[in-house]
Length: 84
Image (cartoon, rainbow, N blue to C red):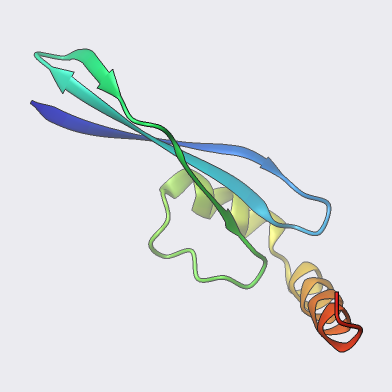
């Protein structure tokens, strides 16, 4: 048996967060015999993407400009300040 990980960049939000879905397929002789429920997570601007799939890194590199990271951090700080 072989385990295959399929990573999909689902979408990205207006504030630069990237929604990532990872599905695990169990293969036997190259044929998918099972699939586990997908794991979803979000990559925020400024997050370390070195451990992410190459497709996620490419999208993050394009979206997470210094301006987007600064705006995301400022919005996050404002939410903390105002208790949201």
